[in-house]
Length: 515
Image 1 (cartoon, one colour):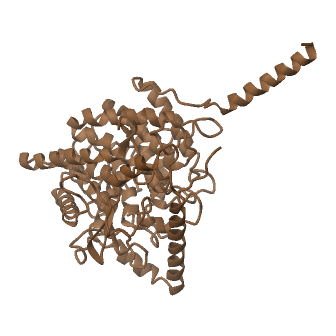
Image 2 (cartoon, one colour):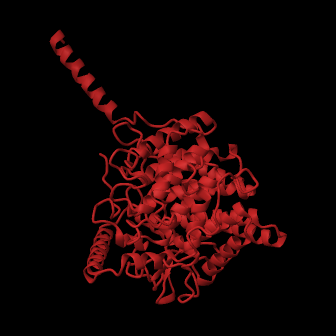
Image 3 (spheres, one colour):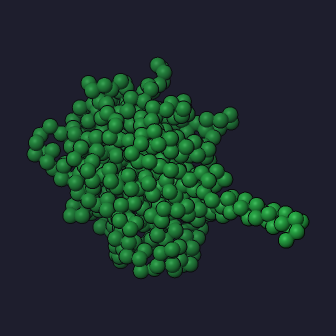
């Protein structure tokens, strides 16, 4: 071969190597679960990529708000993730953004009912902001400046406004999903609204020692059990019930419901002094932990999965973040129910390893995907995916952290038992905003119908999941979505707030895939 031909062949070989090199996951994480430095380093990078989706701390941005298609509640969840990030790593890089976001969205009555959100705000939406500031109080996140509302007082304000909405007139109790009567979903009582309220009440009882919060937590638990949304035999938690037929249970299970109740039950165990009552809450903690088994898959059954939508590729924007909260609250529960550590930590460590292995997307080769059971990037990226991966990696540090603070136990946050004014924020805002016009209602129904039709058409095309045969994923789906003639929703479409997703591909559950 002459030198010219040899040179050409060499150039071709270099080009092939370059192309192949560009396809390799150059930014893939080498997570060492036995090294605190490795865990912190990986979490730091995941946080950076998560915050690349957020512009609320930039000029022209709105603090606490994520861009379309994310809803307001996920901004609160993101602020909670930043509080967790600081608690586990000690890295204060994102503290200013978290403080700014948490304070900017409090609203004029300092109860997380800002006027620009109250037309569509649900109890669960408000609850996520309440739980974020509750974590800030428990973790001793730097207190806001004097003159600003304090973390504990904000959590109490959310609790007070929600307790005033407890609805005995339908289904014997519980919170409605939506706050306002004109919103789609007002006639629905969903488990996550009850879960946020229960979680917050239990943690306030533990932090303050005030037994009235504990009484409300017990009341919320009892209603969940009596309504059939929490199965006392399996401890499975189902999506919700319609108020026009309280026995018609929507049967789908979501990981954040299990996590919210697990942490609340652990807080109640830790708070309760009576030995018999502690035994009851210990049994409930164990039962809820057993119930989380449906959210772990993979070859060894130890990798977290959103079982009702991941196998069929229909997780909407909200649902793409749910594993973040299960990881967050499973880890936190071990501080108040220490015996759970032996069961929880192997699951979280296996999930963290799988999540890190699935973070090989994007230009830098480290964006995280939605599905971890395959230990490979699936092409779905977003805030929820980054938050979930970061939270499960951070959770591997929980053994090294001290127990959450409380009044008399290192807590510094200033409370206000009367925060929120003791008045139902829904009625107050309704007076301020006035009735919704007929045109507005018609538009909402049109959007709802269009979103539902799109989801049903998309579901019709699903025959085989990517890399997983039909019988396999249908068996797992049956575990979280038991057949029932009462259900009017298809797999992956059960959460009612699917109806309020904007008309975009990401909102329908088909996120843009990176090729």
